[in-house]
Image (cartoon, rainbow, N blue to C red):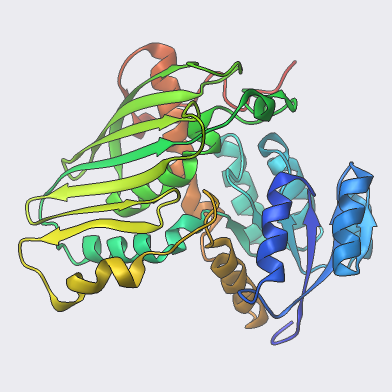
Length: 358
């Protein structure tokens, strides 16, 4: 495969696939050939397949057998990820799966073992780690520019109307979860990635506006191993549009706030001991984005393609690395279920999230 054009197939031609289409059609992504699109909705898969001039499939085994894909993108509902990724890996295909990789951590570990056994890439779309503003913040944390960190906070104030939850899977415990596992999981991942291990969490949820099995609003407190405290405020009950997705870090030597609608704008960047780059941080690392998806799917896809074309299999963001985020989500839900603090060292799992109907 080294240096060859990478053959890619897509499983799932719904809402998220339309965003990927924009990225593939942009100048941000190159070095690939689309060879197949699969969805049980024949019209949806046919439209995308026609756009790329490739074949449309209505079942996954046919896609994997006939398309010749080296990389498979799994863009189906979250509760289907485990089975669809497993099928692709067993067909000896590399995989990039939308978040969350699986609904429960144990399934993610199973997939990691399968990928490692077959020497395959297994990546997950936590693209916000590649945002220029988040990369800038990561560098500052790594350089200890904040000194002792006091607090770290994420706020998500997005809008989802009831029709979003009326599709049969969004907002359900089996296939999705609520705001924390569907929307805010990106920002929870960025927070955990930047701040390191978490000792314990305490969370509460409500359905304030929407009607769904899970929650449209969560507020939580976190205790990090480094002694800092964290907070999460996440809702899809903001109206009339998406307003904010922010991450802030407060320390003895500085304060930073990455905001905008998708962790895309450096809003605050001040330090006790400033360096020359600080004066241009806002202008250099901020990006305008059209919506909460942001624009980092493009760099994520290109990094994935480039890595595989070099004959390497290390994913830009691996499923193995993302298991920590999956465990944190379950800890938050478990805290809600027991009505108090839970410790992550015990690897608590929700009794609702990802549990299949009997």
